[in-house]
Image 1 (tube, rainbow, N blue to C red):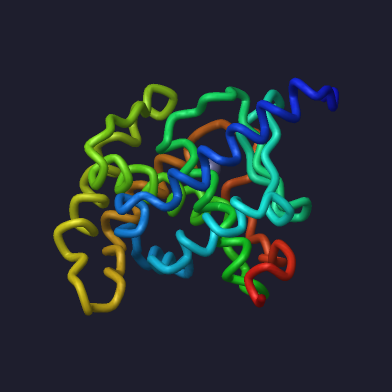
Image 2 (cartoon, helix red, strand yellow; image 1 turned 90 degrees about the vertical axis):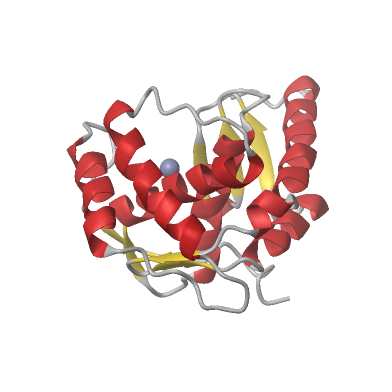
Length: 196
Ligand SMILES: [Zn+2]
């Protein structure tokens, strides 16, 4: 990955776009508890703030879709990812940032990120594309619908029902990917921004 001015500008443009996306009401409405991963709505504006300063969360374009918490860096293969893809990667970063010391299985991380992206599309009216995960679409939609209809102002986060979570996890675990889905990873945080 080169570090040309052009590449840096692409990353900077996307960083602004990520901050704007994370400030949308459709993001602020996303909250749930999925096994031991908990997403609270106030986390979204915190992450947007971290993106805006540019010193805490960086963006690089051109080397895959990934979140690198140790280096507080988002990687996107495209310079213009869909907003639900931004929400997906941001969810990974939020879990790393806010579950410090907890062990979270890779498949739980993925299920939470997919649920957040699906909820974003339900709340924003934008369309999703799960063509690379064809079997995931139906159970993910059922889970997201459950969370949506049961999320009420002033009430605690919806606990995702184990039967629906189990279906999503079974499909994600069955995918042949580079990641070991059943590996538990101790969340180490992403730096000091969360405490400041
Ligand atoms: Zn993911």
